[in-house]
Image (tube, rainbow, N blue to C red; front, side, top):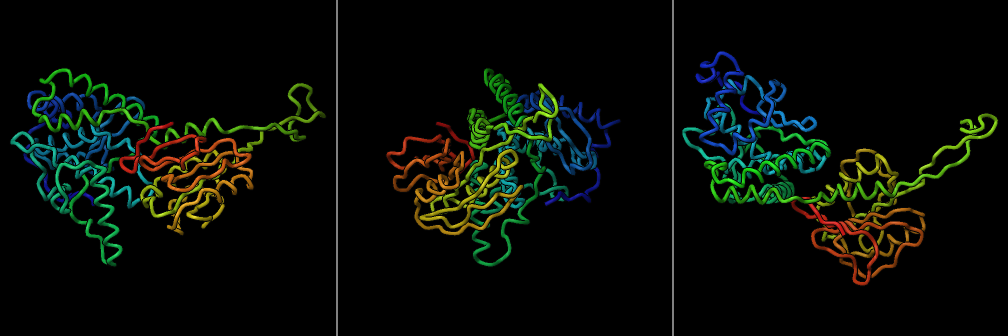
Length: 409
């Protein structure tokens, strides 16, 4: 949903000698009216980039950049430009751009829409800050979708997902498209950059929260929402990846293709052979949502880049696999949706001589025995699920259905 780009340049844009002079004015004008927003804007380097179309926050190392289209900026009045700036800052303080989303393009788009629905309604409209004119861009608002106000990004995502599934079931077109436009594409950053910017934002909000004057016109309710968003959480996929990183072991074997490092030829050298093999098992019973299945597959894509991965799908028995998980697989047809029985998976892991077993499940099933020969078992448990009663072994990672954060045990 690109912005409308045929609008003429605004009269305000013609008042300035250069774009740098305009940025200087916009930044200074926020000091008295919106000191909280101003604190984050001065953190950003402003970079002209016509490929952005509108504006968007990016990160390079420990620096935050605000990329913008000069054409888009020139279409905006000063009050409209301030509205877009507030929009970008709210994405930052709510950490919308650093949460991992699905590699599925449609799911990514729904996530972007949900982020805009959550923050656009929080932007005050005064003479100082005004929503852009419709001929420039029509932002997304909850009322256009028939959704209630003041929900979180995660709640709006769930509503959008349910509406999308209902549209598919009814066989008609999507009732989501055409309701509004994205102000930016909320580009996802790398894991390292996400950690850096999250910590920068938390420290800045903590500093500003010590003085009521720093918040300016931010209302008490929105202030509480921003502070709550700074709670440090651990991404389940990061726990999983870091833990699996310790599971890779190597074994040396002789080879005549390399000289012996000590004695040279004709003595054989050695090479390292990775022997770890991971079995990823997905519980396809009705208790696991389609969204959790997609997000789990997203992380399996990343795991298989450094680990050989076999995938198996099960409910009360094995329904698919085991099959090698190919690189960057984005979709998978799940069968089953019956009850849950872990024992066939445990038996398969033992028979296949897998070194590690990773399971996505809610844990609702009968007791099972530890897979013989398997060194590590990781339970990826949806929400507050737990392994079957009596199963005290294995590492536990709790995957929150929304927003995708977890605790580890």
